[in-house]
Image (cartoon, rainbow, N blue to C red; front, side, top):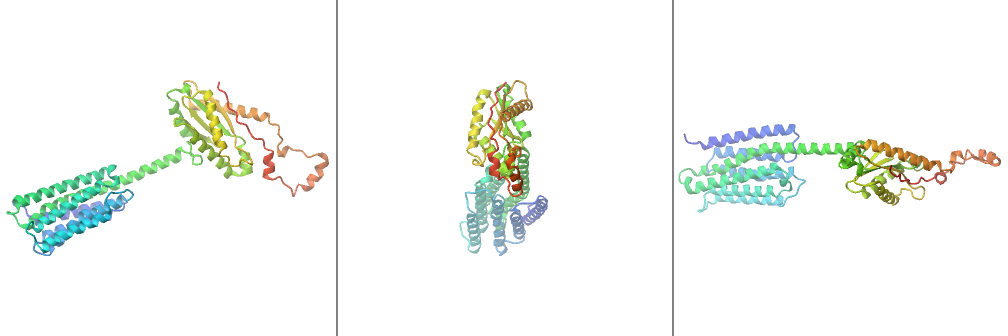
Length: 427
């Protein structure tokens, strides 16, 4: 039974329309990205080209119209690809797409208006279709996202395979089929090869939308994970994440690691006299000092409030004093109010022992920090403003001026003792 070419073309047109409608309906549910409308338009115009080609012959005006509608598919489809991957770069400008399509249309229509002896109109159309297909395959390979997208690599493979089929059909037409079949059937290979690639593109568009949704979902998960794991003020790991990172850091050699705990001396007074924004800035500068000072293998974290912790893998307690001095030195360069009060640290450090967890080492270091801090403050005999008692002969005068005279913040600050940094020796 001989193949009925018009029926085959109409069948491909119907299948392409149904596939495009199904792809569009699924894409709407998936919230299709930019470029989907270009693919739908390209498929619709190409389906019209197949239907028109099935109902016309090469001598009628419908032949060049069908050729133009068919030649647009690779370029319009490429326009959708460019918009879908608009954030990536490309080596070939979009202006080249328009120039390539214009040249292909002019050559094809010109061969129909003024036939040439070297090739028939159908063969010229097939050559133009092959040229556009190979051009689009080259452009797709030049996209920046090509290296990371399996969908683009699959599309290029389909385009190259379609071009090979078109060339094979053209060779058969020139060498063998031309003398045996009508001239109108010489375009069959070019149109059917393009139709197969168009059907492949309807499926790849869904895959691309799915890949983009998965990529956005993974990015959202990374952002949420960052919010869960990182303290937004200091940009250091929070308590929970610090425990996770520290446990992994010291797992190889626990007894060779040092754990340091420190807090800001008299942080509450800084907040009361200078304001909470200044206190937050001081904590932010501590986080910056830690990131700029510590090694890549070290782990720092904010335990809460003004309390921080640092784990130094493969570091002895005696060597940790150098790290502490570097942190303090870097923090001194970032004082938020050096003329009013200096942010100083209370430090406690311990050498971890074998089979000890981070939580256990933290309890020892915090106990040592509190002990050193209390010991330093017991020797602090400077009176506080609320404890200062007026002289008996000035008591009446002080009571008279009590309502309209209050101490200024700078006056209060001049009476606040500045804490010293105490480095705790190991046990």
